[in-house]
Image (cartoon, rainbow, N blue to C red; front, side):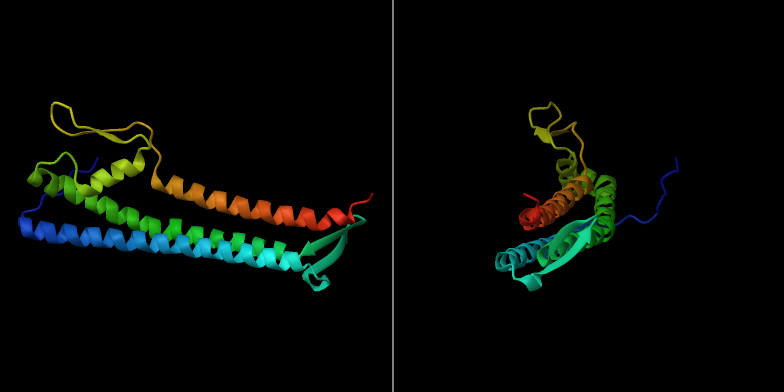
Length: 196
């Protein structure tokens, strides 16, 4: 384990608070970028589903592609393609969110936790800094605070699940829903072709 670097520079409380404020603003920025990417993904989903429903209800011949697979006639409605394209778009948004914005947010949060642990927590006499407390409640699904502990606040929690896993599950649910919707439309549009 590497030794902690020793610094001869002692920042003033005002400098620490100014730095902490900037760190929190940076965390807010990356969190906002993540939220905007999720909103963009959900906008794709809503638009695609709405358009697909409208087109599927019209069901004119020019909305279908017909082809044979193993002597079986298949009709592919354009709405299936729209929903599948949306699933791919949501996957792209997922990658941007989790692999870019979320990683930068985690870096800003880690820096904030380090700053709070090394300077602010001790200076203010707290068990955890704000970033540390938010991280605790984000990482533990059963997070709580025992205010009756002899030493004051005691943060508790044992069921750990990080934010990345929760966000990934959100995207997985959306993508699976889209794939199921595309499959349902494909099946429904081909029921009339089934042999009787």
